[in-house]
Image: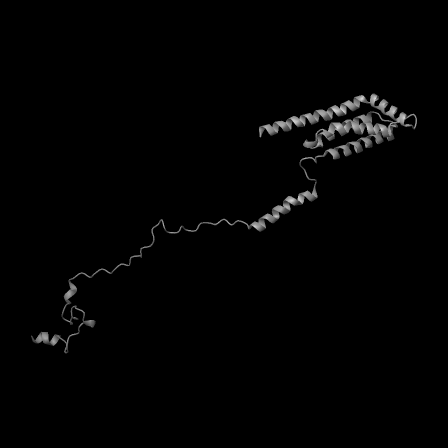
Length: 216
């Protein structure tokens, strides 16, 4: 008894704060009452439940940046329009109307006849060959609605060239008519060759165009 009284410190025993029901603070010679009980494991923090995986937004991937519309169209227009001024435009040939076909036929035939008259003092093979070339160009370049203008305007231009530039024996009207008939008879081969070539090309174009319309 004397030994236990001596070992205990004087004064009241200490209790845990807030009146918690726990073991008193042991003294120097006393073991704690809860020494044998296992300590409670610390509470683990769990992450807050978020939205399901299907509802979660996907991670942003690499974005493809496209140029603005206004900026992209300007260089394209400049590239497409620049060659038109620097070089000759390519594509379909210019089509002639009926009036245009007649004017071109007369001017071209008179030019060829004048050149032949200037070089050889007459209307010979140069005039005939030039007439065939003119008829070919007229038949190729006339538009589809005026196909008949090519084989009709060719002979008219041929006769007009003979009437204007063919040599006549006298200055009367009868002399010019005789010179025209003589020129047509002597150069009938060139006349029929050029006119027939124009007629064949016009007929081929007409048939091809009709087949295209039927296939559509």
